[in-house]
Amino acid sequence: KNVGNHCDKGADLLQKRPMLAHLENYVMYHHTPWTELLGLDLSEAVKFGANCIYMADRVDILALNGLESDPNILGSREQIRRKIKAKAGRWFHYDLVDIFLQISAPESFWLSMEQAQLSGYASSLIQHHSTQEIDFQELKKIILIFSQIVDAKSTFTTQHSDGVANLSRTLGELFKLSEHQCDKLELAGLLHDLGKLRVPDEILDKPGKLTQSEYYIVQRHSFDSYDILKNITGFEDIAK
Image (cartoon, rainbow, N blue to C red; front, side, top):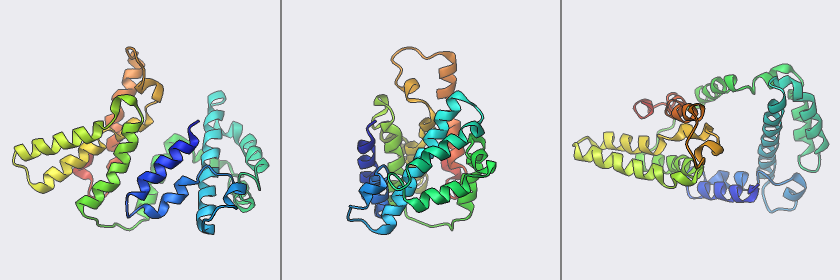
């Protein structure tokens, strides 16, 4: 559903950001089958990378669908492996499928996909990357990608993050805060709803009153935003 649309929008967001523009085609073609990628005027690295993302996306979706009928992820692993293998040479590069079948054989591969393991995995990735310093304007351009993704999640939140960011900065200036403090307020405003990405669309777009359970799901988004941002060097105050 709307596959091409979200590929185009994602690629467009990256294309407008110089630091990330080189990733544009990976996103643009991350739902394009391998047989179609072969005929496109793209580098081999982009074709292979986009196809890798496509397969990872399919494995994740199949795993989530399996969890709906069986909460134990191991219960659906062989079915997922068979489905991916069946698409070798058509949807996915043969080599990618071979690699997937090798690394997905142990139970640990599937258990590491559980929600409880993902935060630790993300933290590990951050620790293995060097810190890069960028100025405020460049950082803001990158953060705008995330705020626009969050605001696009619901018809009720169009440009909401921009409004909060602008108001936060204006209030900071009225209170005579330093430019650096106002910069942080603006970035915090852009990122304050990041945790809403885990809130189901049917709850965000519900026309009527939320149930108590649904309200609790929405209410936790501020903590989820903090949890995402707290491990980023330099974002300690923004996370709070």
